[in-house]
Length: 226
Image (cartoon, rainbow, N blue to C red):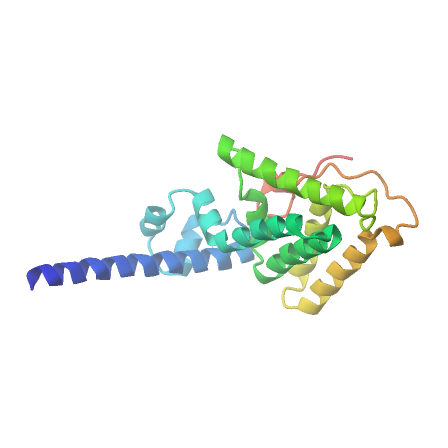
């Protein structure tokens, strides 16, 4: 009987810990959407209704909190890229990938900065993950161009331009899904080879890792010079 009570108590503590963790993750997504991923950890803790020590017990670093808060969204992006590469029609794969990532931007306003920061190059593993994603996207672009559907002067760095433009719209009109979908449709149509009547200016030096989309982060406000 005593043993049973002890186990029940342990289970209760574990359940409390799980609830605290979920509260922290929900609060983090809300705070990051409002203030960017550089918002104080104490602000997240207050929103979650837990102590700062409790937050750090679950998430020892900001990177850990950001990754876990948007883990589902990052998994969706990885899966979308994998499915895009496997699509029989490269253009359809390309289109679905852009639509999926932009939908995530629309649904989780803190996600764009998390997307950029998800694989910080602080370890070789993270650097390899980022390089693999960039390499896979470049492969998808080349396939879509070879099929004749994607304009020949589309550059992989144009994905950064797309995300930055869409992020601005979502930040200004967070509840307007129709405007978001219309912008994405306009952009996708402009990427079609059969609409490419005039050549584009040279591609930007922007890369996903340097997108200035976290408004509260001076490090991410610096765009490359032309």
